[in-house]
Length: 246
Image 1 (cartoon, rainbow, N blue to C red):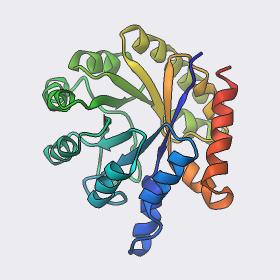
Image 2: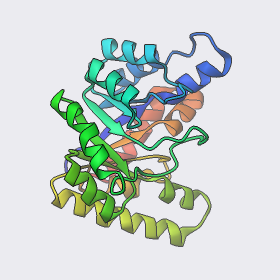
Image 3: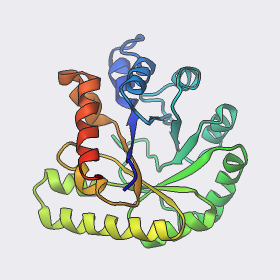
Image 4: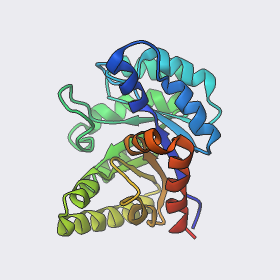
């Protein structure tokens, strides 16, 4: 199987910075370190309420990085304008609710198909690779394909939550759905990524899907970096990912 790419999400370095204010810890410094430690890409989510990543962080990331930036954003006019100004390598369209602590589910593409098709067209024309963050659901995958997305990112949160809660029947059912939908999306010509809530304990079953080309992992790696350092935390995640791809 092909080598699985690791995208490192640095949002929660900014969360720690913003808890106190000021400029430290700097998420851009974390991104540069992650790049040096072998990250294949950096993910940053510029939320409408700017709760972690700020506009200035996106400016600095675009200047500093040599690896691709995956710019996560809601499907709003403001975010589209920011993306078109910067033209990052990839944009990942995600659902966003002000009251949520973290992204709670996949985007409802089928219900907003016409609107999303028009929304992503200028991004594709600008050279951005468009990814849609969705649940492992055939209806949503079909809609993502119809609107012209090049990539889908499967939401792994339900699988990870069920594992953490010891609900192994639900965990296994979620894993089976993701396996089936990875195969289905690949058959349509979509590139398949996955992410949300992945840990050392949950990464290998998802990494084993041959159709998955990239995992985007943030909160867990930043948390482990407090204890281990970012390099060792990433190295262990990479080891686990590679172990099931050989």
